[in-house]
Length: 247
Ligand SMILES: NC(=O)c1ccc[n+]([C@@H]2O[C@H](COP(=O)([O-])OP(=O)(O)OC[C@H]3O[C@@H](n4cnc5c(N)ncnc54)[C@H](OP(=O)(O)O)[C@@H]3O)[C@@H](O)[C@H]2O)c1
Image (cartoon, rainbow, N blue to C red; front, side, top):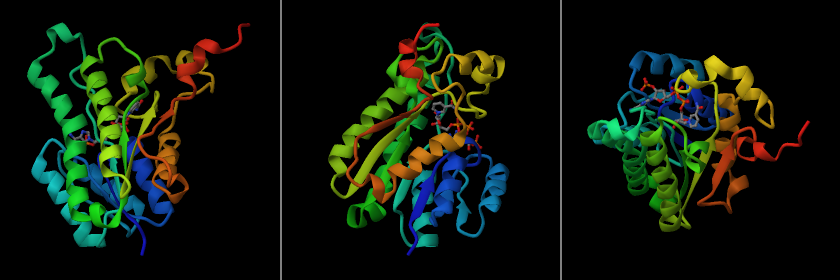
């Protein structure tokens, strides 16, 4: 029987591209996001093997419901992609509202842990599976105004490695860390300066959601069956740009 996947934050952007890639491989997919209408439109575009489970990943009851719904509809849960995230609150940490800071961790770290726990209990402990957490290339450096996002995503990367150790050999847990990708979340970065940003990248363009989706698709496939605890950076070479030849 076809594999079943649960993908959070999949009404647009990287999550929707992952859903498209996995359905193209024959998987059944359950998609989440907060806006039910945008989510319904996304699911309709994917065809009969896709279902919607609208809700906020900050709500623990929604996470339990998403796992239960996937099991009821598809009878299995082989793949979990923790993709939904928030980059709020932006700005310097000395003026950040600690409650907003806490929400960044609730959405970006606690929700992936809760979902992995629920998926483990409901299916993966007994049947195996693959988890991919979408982190960010930014965990490898420090950027202005993204302190809450950066620290939460760094915690998610650490969580990925811890879970990889604890859930092996039944379940593989890996991270994919995108650089700048053309989505709504990053519009405030790429829209004003795409040409300059692209020119500074070794691979000479910003990322598209499909670039990241292909990495996820591969990591959850049997092709990656001896890989766990890895961080697959998909960034157009941003981290090596300082080594480009002069002239
Ligand atoms: N784009 C980049 O340059 C970039 C770079 C590095 C990492 N990433 C990571 O890539 C992932 C996907 O981001 P994206 O760029 O594709 O963003 P996007 O296009 O804005 O999509 C975000 C998706 O997540 C959903 N979402 C947001 N908050 C949610 C919540 N609390 N509960 C449930 N769903 C929620 C959104 O729908 P609703 O608003 O309706 O909930 C939407 O479906 C994120 O983990 C992000 O940190 C992106």
